Structure formats: structure tokens, C-alpha cells
Image 1 (cartoon, rainbow, N blue to C red):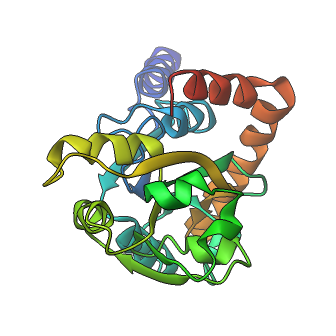
Image 2 (cartoon, rainbow, N blue to C red):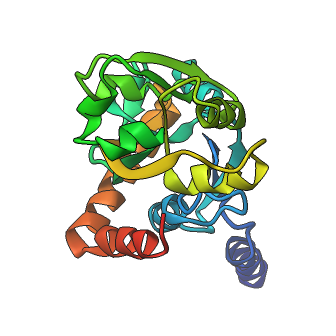
Amino acid sequence: MRSLLAAIYLSCLAFVCYAAPKEPVVINLVTATWEGYANPDETGYYFEILKRVFPAPDWQLEVQFMPFARTLYLVEHDRVDMMLSVYKDDVKHSLLSQYPVELDIIDAAVTPGIAEKWIGIESLSYKKVRAMLAYRFNTLTPAPMYYEESSDMLTMLNTLNAGHIDAVLDYRADLMGLIPQLKKPKSFVILPDVLKAEAYFAFANTEKGRLLKQQFDNEHKKLIDSGEQARLFKETKAKGY
């Protein structure tokens, strides 16, 4: 009898020892492509932070790349768990990370005439300014602009190049990448650091979203306090992004 009980005990112990490993928590994440920050191959500054906050194998990222306006819609309607890079005023329903992940720096492509007399963002007062859909750069400055948004950056740059508008607000890397596709040789000037704003990660306002935010905030604070976030950001900026 004792030998039978011992066999049963050993069998149970073996089952515990060889039980299937715990399944990872899957995070449905959406993001626009931000060169140097959220690259299509899931590299860049944002993903370096995510790897440290949600390390494998306990966490598994399921990433979809899409236009920014679409990512904003999905997280605001609790269709996904998380999205990357928003300003405080971008979301009404979703939850923001407790601390910013970076200081977002926006550049501008402007006509030569505006570049020659540039004194700051005030130089775009009452000028025709364009930006990508849902970026809402006009909310970052009190300067009154004739501001519109579109989903086609190349068309905006061609319009600027033809002198029909005064400026396009975006990121230098993205602007430079489209120059070879212009209809005519580039005539505009790219000015750096015309606007700045703190950027956050956003989470769905669901039970899962709140748990993910808690995990992120706790681990993110460690990255900030240790200087790791500053180091990663410095490396990214050193590469020209």
C-alpha cells in the first residue's frame, strides 16, 4: 500500500515538474511607423523600452503598424490594448502612462522666404500649414495658423514645393525620406526643433489595459530612475532621429 502511495506521489510530483509552462500575456499593440522609434521590423527607441518593461517570455507583443489616426481610434474604442506615442490631449477615454517616454521634437519644411526670416514658430502665424491626419500640431502653439491635415505627406510636400502652401510640420527623417519622390527638385528648407511636446504611451480603459498600465508604470519608473531611458533616447538622437 505504501509503495502504491509512493508511486502516486512520485507521479504527481513528475506532473508538477513537467507541467506546461505558463502562457505569456499577449499585448495587442498598434502604432504608426516612427523612424528610429517604431520601425516596421519592431526595432527602435519605443521597442527598446517595451522589451525592458514587458520582457519575454512572460509577455508577448502582437504589433500592427497603421496610420496614426487609426491607432488613436482603436485605443480610444478599446479595440486594442495599447498604442505608442500620444500627447496628453490626444486621448479622452484611454489611459496614459504615468510618465512621458520622450520629449517629442517636431521639425518643419518651409518656403525659402519664411526660412530667411524665421524667428520661431510665430513665423507661421496666418500661414498655410499642413500636417498628417490627427497629429494636431496646431494645439502645441498659440500661433494662429491656417492649419489643415491630410493622409498624404508626399502630396503636401509637392504642394509646398510648388509654393501653394507655406509649411509642412513633421519629422526630419520622414521629410528627408520623401525628397527623392518629389515631382520637382526640392526648393523648400527643413528647419529643426520648431515644436516640442511630451509623448506618452496609451492604454485601453479596460481591466487588461489598467493591468498593463500598472506594469508599465512600475517598470518604466525604474528605467527613468536608473538613467536607462535617458541613455536609450540619447543613442536614438545620436543616430539623427
